[in-house]
Amino acid sequence: MESDIVVRKASFRDTDAMIELLRLLFAIETDFVFDGDRQRLGLTLLLQTENTSCVLVAERAQHVVGMCTAQLLVSTAEGGIKALIEDVVVAESCRRQGVGRQLLMAIEQWAARQGAKRVDLLADRRNNRALGFYQRLGWLETELVCLQKKVIAHYDKENL
Image (tube, rainbow, N blue to C red; front, side, top):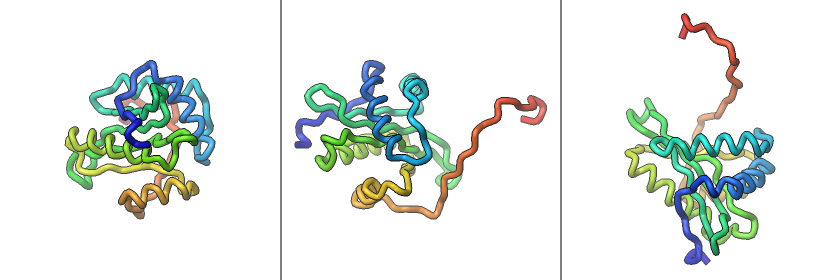
């Protein structure tokens, strides 16, 4: 089944299909609420910043059936570039067919070409199916915890 999957860089014409995949993903994740307009804005920003991000889609018979994104960051721990992988999702009808593995392999290769020394991946801690999948692919759980806080719109220019 893997041979009929094509993994490629996403384009703006893939946005609607990726938004539907994100709808599936956010239904699983407890920290996020699906908002198609916000997801469209986020995807647009990622697609516009090709020098620091990568959006991949998996296609079968010219239909987008999976996606993942990555962004480059500086890691002081590594003393260099790392890539943060997010939004790994495969359509339910195509799961357990190697699509996710192909997406992750391709995004890791992109990160390596960018000079990344490490790749990090965010996943919902309650998504046992995904966590098991990542472990089978050699991903290791760390002791780090992801914390979030909304940015407050006001700021003091003198104290930046």
